[in-house]
Image 1 (cartoon, rainbow, N blue to C red):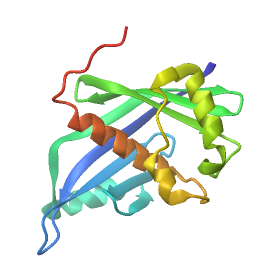
Image 2 (image 1 turned 180 degrees about the vertical axis):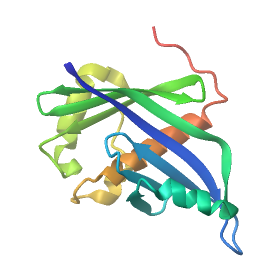
Image 3 (image 1 turned 45 degrees about the vertical axis):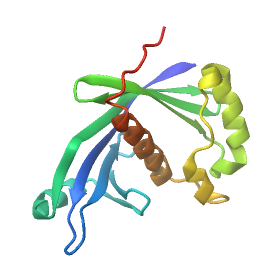
Image 4 (image 1 turned 180 degrees about the horizontal axis):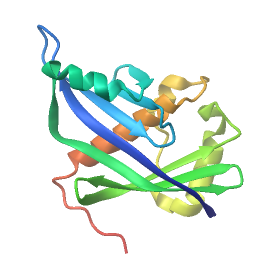
Length: 176
């Protein structure tokens, strides 16, 4: 695999949104350097809004309706590699100054319907991840034969980041 010149960054900020007469709902505002002109706003188990990068400016103007949630910033920074038709993005997941984990994103470029190439993706990931290869992502369960979109990737990052945030109290063994 040869590294490309491009580094990647995926960032998550968690906001607690207050809607009149309801308890606060978590909203995840995400940015991905692969889509620099877009901002993704997701609700857990809810819709994904894709807006332009000025969405953050709008949220500042609406600051009376939300507050930053505790431990609200988490990000993955790394490098993308291309091997034949596969794109592999490996990043270090950090919360504040501390590294919390590793993210591995794999894309098979010729295919836009993820379920059609899942077995091929699994075989490719097993070649370098071995027993650490993940199972089928939950987002595939709702997509079936639909075209895979950047919003689907952001949902998977949100799930990964939430899993890491919830494990922050648990000591993690180092990799040898």
